[in-house]
Image (cartoon, rainbow, N blue to C red; front, side):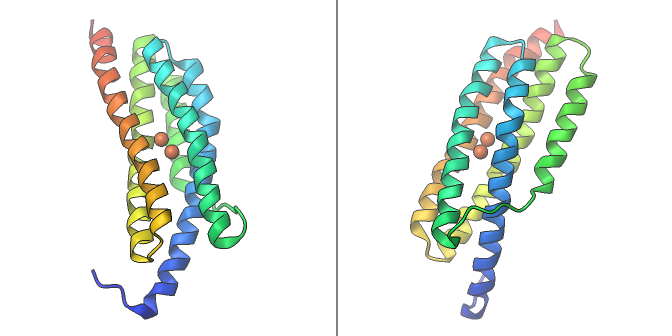
Amino acid sequence: MKIFSANIEDLRTLYISNLKKALDMEQKITDALPKMIDKSTDPQLATAFRDHLRQTEGHVASVEGLLRRITGDADTITCKAISGLITEAEDSIKDASDSSIRDITLIACGQQVEHHEIAVYGTLRTWANILGLTEDARVLDSILSEEKQADVLFSSISDGVNLQAAA
Ligand SMILES: [Fe+2]
Ligand SMILES: [Fe+2]
């Protein structure tokens, strides 16, 4: 896809508004993860959520830093997608009949969130590259790597938890 110079300002505006949505998304995930830790029965799962909470706090700081550099402040725009995923997760966890099913539900919801974040940061990194914001692209790429690692970790934990739920 070709981006013409006349469109670059529009892309820059789009990039900034999506960074603001990413900041809102990370803040909401930071609020949601402690509840997911509390609800986890499997100790490996609780640890994975705890570790990812620390990474997520880092994502908040990194995205805030990018926004401050480009706009001078760290405003947010509501990310409706993450609100929907979190509401969905809360409903599913409430419906879970026992601890194994609840753990499976937590992993499924966690992975839906990670997949959304992977899509968000993949897009933002591509746009940063088009805009020539190489430092932004580097920061976004490192966040993207952590989201992908979290997703892989959840997949490997889910293998064990799924077996327990089936037993
Ligand atoms: Fe994140
Ligand atoms: Fe994440």
